[in-house]
Image (cartoon, rainbow, N blue to C red):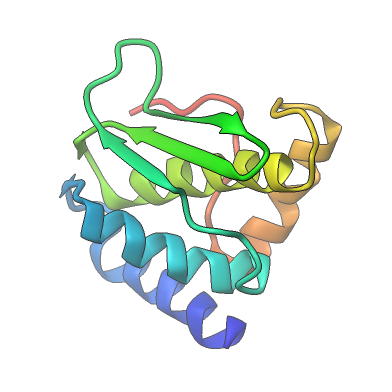
Length: 131
């Protein structure tokens, strides 16, 4: 349920939020599913492609090939798990925008998710993240 997923995120942040994390496909799928249940009621499709590689300008990004394909590219290491989950949920909002046929941006529609995410998970939706 969403309540169980929300508690899982909050407890994880309390216990391990400051620990570094090496990102793997398994890690992404696990936390995509947990955050999907906690924030999006399990309605967000998982990315069809995951690319783990270093990015100079960003921690991660979502891109699309067509209306049904969402691809996630994300850095292989994060200095803390809180940052990783913040970045992942940020990209999930973009994936939601894409799934709704909306442009992926940091508009008012994107920012409207901030209080929902904060209340349900304790995470912080921002336009830009810093270590």
